[in-house]
Amino acid sequence: MSAAPLGRLSKVDLRDAWQSEAGDFTPWLAQSENIALLGEAIGLELEVEAQEKDVGPFRADILCRDTAEGHWVLVENQLERTDHIHLGQLLTYAAGLNAVTIVWIAARFTEEHRATLDWLNDITDERFNFFGLEVELWRIGDSAVAPKFNVVSKPNDWTRVVTDAAKGISETALTETQRLQLDFWTGFREHMLARGSAVRPTRPLKQSWMWMAIGRSWCKLMATISTWSSETQAWGPGEVRAELHLTDEDAKTYFQLLTRQKDAIEAEVGEPLIWYTREAVRSCRIGVTRSADPQAGDTWPELFDWLRVKLEALNAAFRERVRSLDAADWQPDDAAGEGA
Image (tube, rainbow, N blue to C red):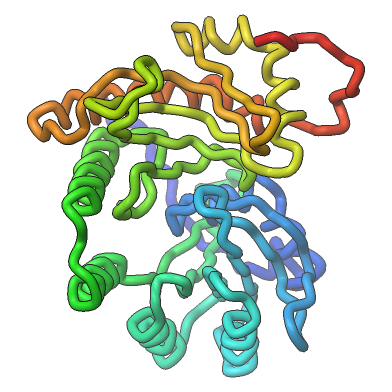
């Protein structure tokens, strides 16, 4: 049997697709499907907040939110080689935004500018992250042109985790509970990554929960371990929870819109969900709970697997629904779906 014919990759000049940065490339990148490509390259889910946004004396190309943690992500574009002017703008942006990720995209990075981003990642704390990416265009034969983002500089997360841990231990020793929480989420993150889960775990911290993105900055997936039992209303042994959290000022409106689809959602998830809202609390939760003792380390592999399966089911059922939610669709006198 003869081998199937193979095409040949050819590189396309960026200016053939985008004549200008502001008029062509930035609007293209700000489209949801294209900002998702950028997010995949740097390991973040991004939600565009604004284009050509004033930050101090300069105007940023694209301002986004990291939907997992709600931090600012500022994108600066160049269709040419990197230069000192853009580097100065990036430093001004970082100074003007308290917790921020800076993404610098260019046709080509000079060695000195790549080294500068590496240095900034080394000397700044976890509030600041600097990425450098080169953008390319490719086609096979007469196919449509396809973009490719190549990361040339990124935060050294391993170094930061070690540095932060050492700093934390030197300043104040972790409590037994904090150590357990940090170890649990470290193991859970490794479990999720090893299995190639569609749900992306965030950095493990010494707390009882871990956020995960689901496409909107005001809505997150959350895994929780607790020694408080919702079923018995008492401490010990406790429970684990996989939930969708709605957190902004329209949380209750979004909650009511989702309850209209309660039957369909639960059918997709494959089990009844707990729909939780309280008048005195702005946020709302939808999810599942399991009795468990998070202090029993020998049960962790089973709990990791349970959390992964439930979070993936919630992600599949809610991701597109959350993306399409619009608070304007709810009328205060519309009782459809209430009572869940």
